[in-house]
Image 1 (cartoon, one colour):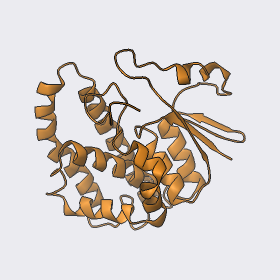
Image 2: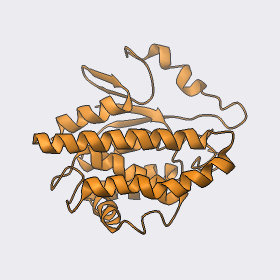
Image 3: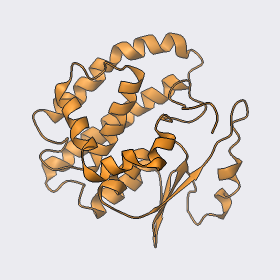
Length: 223
């Protein structure tokens, strides 16, 4: 059975977990807890890291027989190709590439904010810029059903997680973007995704958008 390893948070792994849920793929969801402040002990992972059969041990990792991958983008691309969710035409593949690049850029901006020592002041311009960031996805989506066109792709699961982050940070973020809100609803209504969101496994980490060190989206104080 495949194994997906990551911290016991949503973070970089949740789009992968969502894809696996959508495709009905059985796998072991191996999670590692980080300790609380002030030390944020990572020994649960660091103690086993040298023993795992990976060329570049890191979180997340995905292992399935001869497939042994790290780096979240490499994992979700592999699974997208394997499950037929990586685009069928060159046009679809180009749209996926653009969406994935936007996701990476905007996730990087989010992470820089939530670990910033000036979070309280930095969050003001960040929130003001959310509309411009979402407009890029709205433009790419256009009138299509999914981000690549009329067929779902792995990029949709990246976008779903990003939209959740923005709404959690700024509850009215999607108010001006009905097509993105409709995309979010469409994805959440997929049977596998709905089952994932309704599961005790997801409910346990639903508020843990990021790790414990984050100044936003770190979830409950003790776990």
